[in-house]
Image 1 (cartoon, rainbow, N blue to C red):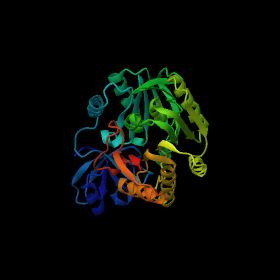
Image 2 (cartoon, rainbow, N blue to C red):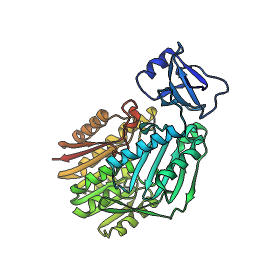
Image 3 (tube, one colour):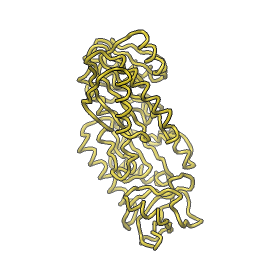
Image 4 (cartoon, helix red, strand yellow):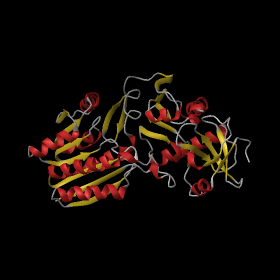
Length: 390
């Protein structure tokens, strides 16, 4: 057994651990050393004293333990280097040559609470737990040695850090980061604000869904919750006109810049609340051949579910009302607290309420550089459905 502080689980905690889930909740801890600090690595024991693995400890979060390994191997620089090599090799397998991609996706790559994204030669790093935060100098050295990046920026502005007692900040700690980094995504060129863009600059989890949407572009296209226009830009080459709607002027400014970069001049940019726009468009009798719904997470916690269910039902019902016969709806949810079967049921109800018949053409999830850990359902959060409407 490693020479580490010992944390003992309750019987319920042991049973939960044996499901393979990498998190242990605070209620399932039977005994914790008083001196154990946030981010410490601890040896985890069953009620009987059997060794169950090594985990990062959290003082504040409801998630008290995040397993690093279920074995007793030394968790040192060689350990983390091997895990990084495995993560990078996987990206070369599933996303070779992709300029904007996720290199480390937390627990799914064996790095609890760590995200690393690459935008060309520039890295964005985000720690969401005191464990990887304390390891950051070592992890940055490993990334620099393997990738020789032009810059590394710490995107420590995710509010979930506050739940762990971590501060919020954004800082480029290595190299020189330009104001915008240009990357290519399929046939599109995109300008990325690595320091100020949402997430770490782009919604990389939707990359493959945006590429899959491109062949469906035709006629009149509506991209609601457009952000920087990712879906709309990919649909634009085959479309007569694309309307992009977002409540953020900053996002629409970026979308305009991306449209200009791609020599697209048949895009309309509308600063508006997407719910209000959809309602008015239905009342005005507008019709579209393709509608994209890619809203932010409506259900960030279980207590958000009732409002989220109503929200998803409303926007999908409006979208069905706006589509011409033969039209295509691309509808998404990134709410983990709404599973795929439940999301599909909401979409079905929306079609019925709109008096439309819809055929499910394709069910998709996050891009392959965002692998879902089978024992961590929380990592399989993104749903993206392509439907054709009669």
